[in-house]
Length: 325
Image (cartoon, rainbow, N blue to C red; front, side):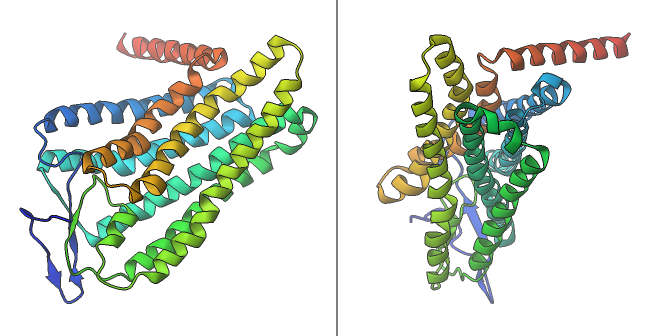
């Protein structure tokens, strides 16, 4: 990695203890434009997801297992955006962000929790759609409140366990060489490549645990949709098929967006020789754009949610007008 133009290291008894994040595009002349765009995206992400949660909470018709999972997906999306975007805005403001090793590890820890939890949550949501379409008589028996809370708790527990173990491996690494990270946030693969110590333990963990947190949720999603497709094909009425597909279209779109960009980022991209700008563009979609789009994807053509949005916004406007008067 080229580090010309940057301080090479900040060394103490333990080696490098600070890193330089290059941002979305090194040396770009459009940093102010990026700053404005990402600020707007962050505001829309937070407001959109918070309003989506408020809509679900305020409308009794939306108090169903599917919307319970969507509510928690919005919590994860806001958390992911908050872990990434403020740091990116800081980079754009100060040209090149200097981050201490402790701060870098903290960001990795939070990021990994959210990503792993979202992997399993999307798999659970696929299972929810499988039960609703393929086994409707069992749906109300399985999808009871304790089961829902238990599944959400499991997502967070798995995320914390994976992230904590991986972070402990990272803390054992020694850094004594280049300290420039060609990204807009600290990511474990990028940081581990800068280590000058043996990282076999981290690599082994990533290989073994990665099979659990990546392919297994993806397999649940694929298996669920294969079963759903098989069931839908057997439905004779066109209206029945339309309703079945409409309940899955939004979730399938989010899954493709999440897993598609994730696979490119962590599976395909490392083996390709591409420009940093292209790599960061995919990461922007994965970590910043997707959390903004998710509540709107689930609202699109969903009359229940759209009616809930309208009713909530009317109540907010009425409340503000009463306060002003």
